[in-house]
Length: 205
Image (cartoon, rainbow, N blue to C red; front, side, top):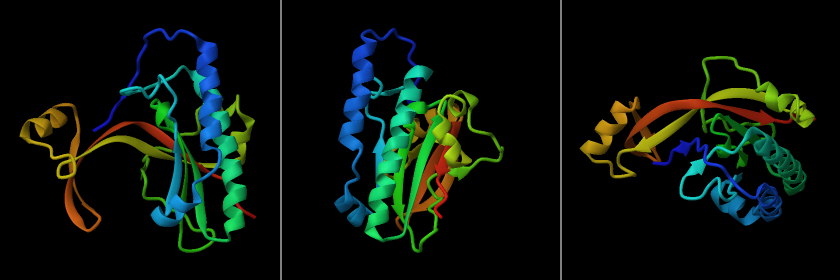
């Protein structure tokens, strides 16, 4: 059970915070091919202090745009590496809003070349364009084809061992109860829409 906070507390030392983006990038610019082989996917989450300390926090827009630029570079580096593996894969960038700190680069195995893995998020009922604050300032995003999905907070009854009080608190907060099957086992899931996520792919010729 993990939710994102919009923390307006003043952050000092912005130059140091920007340098942390570079360190995060250097640590994640190469995929772990062994992990990909075993798990069938590989991903890079944004793990930059202080935005992911204890709870996830939303950084300022200008700071997040710097992170997007690095996500695009990671995507392009990964694309070159996975192309050399000669295996079918689906490489994606996720840009979440307003929970921008949840954005990721994700690569998943697929059954055939040109295939896609689309079961990470529910497709949105609304056709919303990529936010202009990103599209205008980062021209590289125009090279991607974007589909909008719902960003949701999720909790799982059995996995997280939720008791009756936990469940009642979730329902009071507007979570919806759903029945699902995870890894062949019946599960009760509680979901609440908290924004959108744009999933981008570059068309492969």
